[in-house]
Length: 503
Figure 1 (cartoon, rainbow, N blue to C red):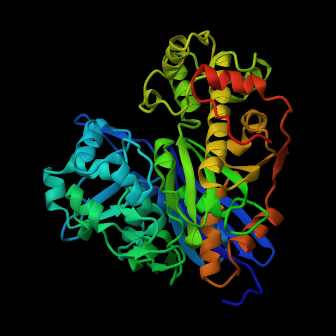
Figure 2: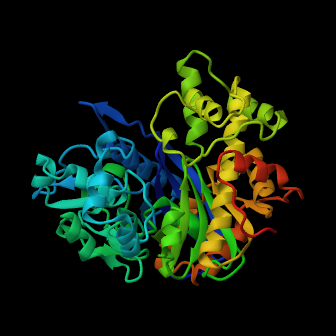
Figure 3: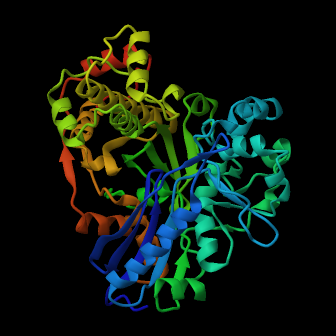
């Protein structure tokens, strides 16, 4: 394609609570993004198991592609798909789905980490894959599923974005940035680890061939074209299909692709906080600190820690509404900005907050366990959540630098949390580093940028893509307050103090 005019690309961006389809006009000096369709992602519990309603998600994708074609006002130059990680669908010999995918927050993996550790000690598993311990990692899901009729009948395993891509194109593949989160990939070779799979009894033959961001994933099927009204051919391109991989592409950092000079926090339901590196950190100290080495675009490594994120506040809002006391987020944030700072904080990485439940009550109990005042009002709880997230961001950024030997002079907050002015300000104060907030739609932007580069519409490496983001997207800047002693004291209260690099 000649790089002299703009082209329209569709990004399918599936999150844990909603999905959306975005259309971007991309060309030299142009990067305009428009949301054309949003749909709910509501998990369903049946038979005691929490499932994703993946057919409803696919219906939303089709509706979104129809809207994308109308909004583009001409042919779509491509489609890319990103989503959350670790979850998958199983297909039989005819390519039919063997049941709805199980949600990562389901309890079926209870006891699976212990079973895995008996076959492959955690330090060996980390040295081989570099992935942090999370109880819902794909390896634990697969070990928990061993012996079930579904897994016995399965001929193929597709991670969520690869499953959607397969239904759209009829061609199966496993995109590498998402594959790395399975805890079955060697981050040094960027290939499957047969040793890990063999030790855990996992059949790597279930996975179709690996793809890299920018690889073709096949054109939309004729039936999809007919259902969406799109004019073919419309290529589907493998992007950073783990939404965080796409989001990091759109971090508007002014520097090279090796990540020197900046940290990032991709915020939403989760906060993913860390650095972009050119090689993994597989030390025992890194494992003990629970950092992960997920693969990124253009051979990079996303060295980060998973933090519970705005899930804490989302669950509080859901609980208050269920209790007949609905709260307006804007009013809560306004009240929290005026509330007493650091009165009570919790460890945002505590697994006690993982499952859906009465979140305000769990937060209050966690404060009581550490001898702090229990938040009594929604405003106090909201301030506790945001102070706690800022503390967790601080710890992750400082420890990532100490463990990797890299330094960061700026923190980039991308994703939905970039809209949260109070969280961004608190993160700057807690880390002692300037914060650049935006773009909020980083995952969709990274998605379309990889597509556009593969199509020849834009060129260059990550630095060039990020320069286009800086030139076209609104950003907000936050300077840190000078004194961080109150943050040190609060971190010590919950045992998450970090006495690493100070700025």
